[in-house]
Length: 193
Figure 1 (cartoon, helix red, strand yellow):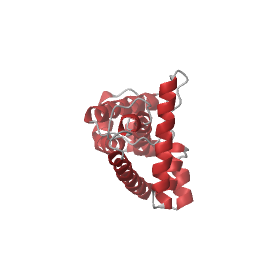
Figure 2 (figure 1 turned 90 degrees about the horizontal axis):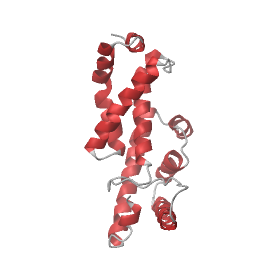
Figure 3 (figure 1 turned 90 degrees about the vertical axis):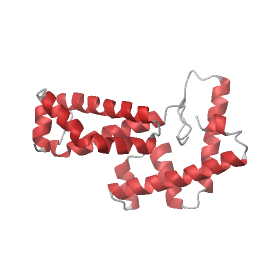
């Protein structure tokens, strides 16, 4: 079944087509989400939400090009993973604190901790030896520039962007962990959440 046929059948309410969508793209969605989230149960939740949202959006006619159903599904997965990653009260230690969302109901202590986290992020980014690593992390996570814009500016393909972003995050993680170890874990309680 072609992607156009698959999208058309999903739009018409075919359960069989929905199952085919999941079969085709489940592994790719899991890989995308697992890059941002280390907790397997969260990966599974985001995977399920991805397909629920994709199916609902296809039924509403929001898939503009049925030939790009794979990109559509992967884009939803990526956005959900990023949204999860940016939640201010994450409990996962393995997540990188690259962004801090403002909360209008935050207490003074929460605001202070958020400022400390932001300062730590800026410090670690400044310590990174690769200008491209700093640039891609800052633009993608802090400034929320679209992937396509960053790819265009840096002359990267979509696949190459994913590799560069992954390596930059790994380098960031190494610096972050060194910083936490050198501080005796004192920053870890506030910065890793």
